[in-house]
Image (tube, helix red, strand yellow):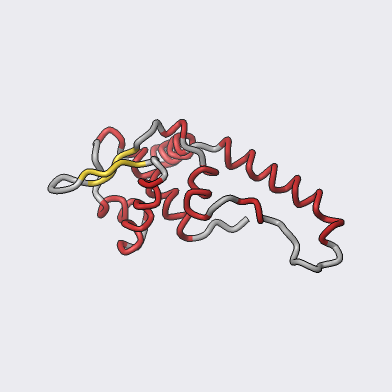
Length: 137
């Protein structure tokens, strides 16, 4: 499965907010730097995440973003579907392909498995792994 750059940016932004949670509000510039996200995409991605209720924003001096929910409740599946839309078309054969009907059950199983894996991975678990990798001697 390929994760689009936009979904990668959304994941990185939420990981940044998780790692920097104790700091409170995190600026768009900090998110861009931490997540290696081009500045022009930060606002677009954060808008999507705000609309989905995953982040809140504060305007003005000292403004920025913060998580709207606990990171243990935000799944990778939810983030990818917020940015990309529902993953139901993943693994579908082109219309008219003679193998399509033969592979439908395999593709359905693959979609189900992918949804289960992405649905069980949380931002908190990813951020925890980053912290362990970063601070390991």
